[in-house]
Length: 463
Image (cartoon, rainbow, N blue to C red):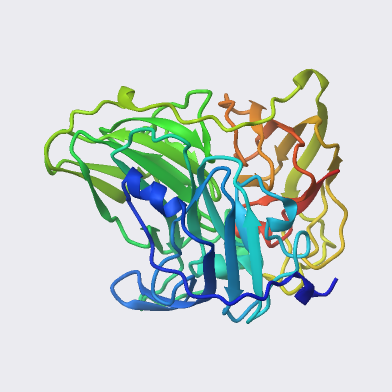
């Protein structure tokens, strides 16, 4: 099929500015917005006081917006590409139709400069998700094209502030301009780390929240590389959702000796009770070499509302298929180094110029290359995927279109919560269980983008 047969023909307009920290009432109003026009385009923005050129966003001078959808209500995004390279938009974590998943050649032909594509889908699940390109992924994500996507709860849980947080960093030099977005050394190891860390495109921003009020902090790790190790000293709170889905197996509150680990692609929703005193602050810290670093702060304002965590109503559970462990089929996957004769990734969607990684000893040959699925799953059946990491590096393994539940690990106890991205630690083997309930070809890859683009990619087919 020719590429232009996939493309819509309606006109488009640029998207508005980011919406952050809205009250629940206004969230409901925004969720009923008309079909959304999105223009992927060059951008410039002051991340450090000096304007950084060569960025990519959905506005010429603002971060990608927080998208707010409703479960069971169709969402339409009319996307045009005004960037210099090919692109395609992926809706990370959403269980949607395969042809709307935004993976080049697997589910659609990518958009060239000036092309447009119409995405239309109905979200099945409420929660915190995100969106990003899946073509020229390394370049476009590193330059800014990552945004938070929220599907609203059916009922108001009772928060006084709902705050989405896009966690990511940037590869900038002393002049605030981009330096090399990746290195061969980084791609062959843990990835190439940024030089400037931000939350919502700001360094250590301060957000006002009602004193004694309840805050929903929606954390999305949209970085190409960084694994976050988070905690909030002195905060009273609970982890209420992971990867968009309400927690069913309780997760301990993040502390310095037991931080909340979020790898690229993962999300966590925290319910926090603000201090009662005006001006008191809570800091979200990341544990890293050299000591903890503040990513953002919450500042108590106004009179004490006197709210308690128990005042919150439970999140509405998403309708998920229950695995049949007694009749599950085991499929093994090995994540490790690529064979010496592995081909270099090719195609319209970008290559880093080398291959380092593989799944089951086979390196992904490139988006436009013909390849067989890693496994063929029968729709409706339960499968246990054994994920074995043979390397000394962490790998956040993401599956499109479906979700799974960790059930065992050779290195640690695992909470049995629904996820779409499994954080595999070095030399860890983790078993996850899923029901193959969504037909199509679904990408399956590491979300350290340098690993993804140098071989650690494949797909599962559900018949």
